[in-house]
Length: 279
Image (cartoon, rainbow, N blue to C red; front, side, top):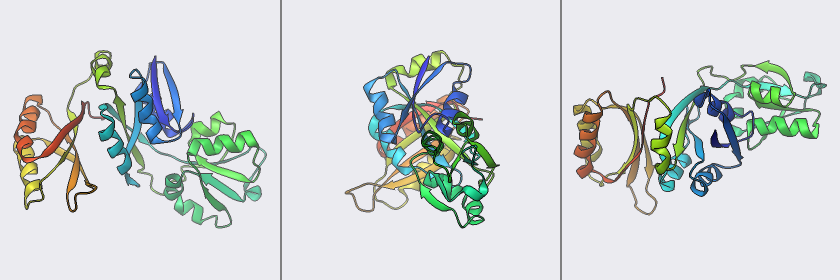
């Protein structure tokens, strides 16, 4: 059995992503209120695996989660990409004419802005989680309240689906990282057929002209494909940045050589994880 810590309630998109990633395996979820709590679960019990969202095709990168990952010392062992499709739901006895308020996570509300603009009489209220919004309405029998959540959350809580696929942009995907204690990486990989062809790195650079371009040129020389680069300011060091980089490769040896080559040019280079790219 896999014990997986997620941010959110049962029926959330994290729940769906965890079961898809560990398809065919028994999964026990630890539902957490915050991302900090998700990482703490692994630090307190190294058998626990964490699932952390890292970017969304509409909302962008979750910058705070990059920092949590780096500070935790945990390792990325995999990734999963999930198509996000939102439903507009209410209690079974309610209907459009009864609704006065809609609750959901602020990012979900933002992703459904066009739909919400078509219903200006609804009061929009932010909540900590999509699935939890549906759960609270169901448990407390909050007539007149609607939620924006997944179909799984609606079905789990016995809610009526009034509209589905209400997200403005249908190309709405969230990328999740699967994170574990470094001592558990080999054990996890032993039971999964994986081809390591992707890595997540973090490093800082001296505040000098051309420092980043030198690193990128070396990666290019070794035929390492850069799929993402995210810069974050270093607190207390004005105009200096740390860079979170994802690279993919088809030759592990060339990848290892590229890491050796860029190391003298960087500061505090750290490999956050080496894993199989999600297809």
